[in-house]
Length: 277
Image 1 (cartoon, one colour):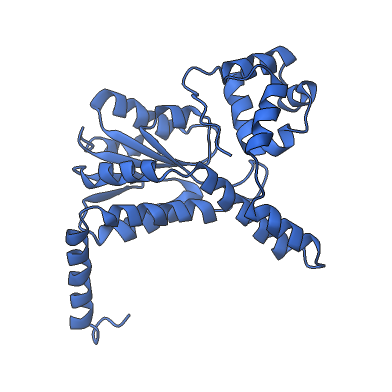
Image 2: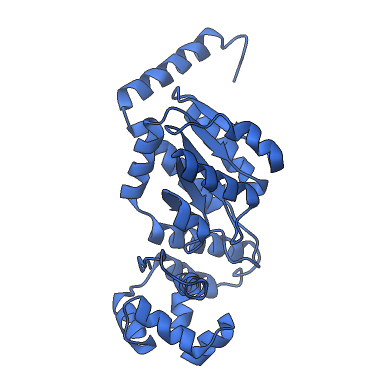
């Protein structure tokens, strides 16, 4: 469920509450205000102020309106099926968890936002892609898929002060795609946003956070659920977002994109004996 709350003016405590409610709204529906406050290590007064801030009279009002919007989901149906079998453990449980991630990602998905990203990328002078850790695989995938369309791309692989070797080339009409996972912003991400503010280039963030400094600073965010901080972080949903992004980019000026693919196919045929696939 997507509550579409404005987070720009939220306090840090309110962002903490919003993030938890977005992720666990079904659990929150069973909580008292005291239980929610204890879970988040906040005061009841903070919880009460939050409901009023986001447009509800109180927690009871939130529960009533949210319950009215709830409908059975595919994930719940699969959960019922798995619970009826003896194999609802191990791989089956992991499979169910991944489905939950995909479903939660789908709830936050916006085709309009994805098309905005596509236009931003296609109209940019150059696209920079930044990633660290496990998200480097997503960086490689996105670069590989977009490069065949003739876009000007650059993978930002430096960290620390060496990041500036990449930053010095970014211009105001460029775009930075930032894979930013985890609640705490990295210093490199802070530098990227600082320069975006100073120079004027756009930042597209692919993130697993709904309420964070990243979502507040990026021009556009694309959400892909990876699970809770204490869980194994699945990259299935973020990978899906990357694939959807590639499709959206290819749909812009489709004729020229198809011509690029035809050139690639021609080269493959020409050198198939020398460079077999």
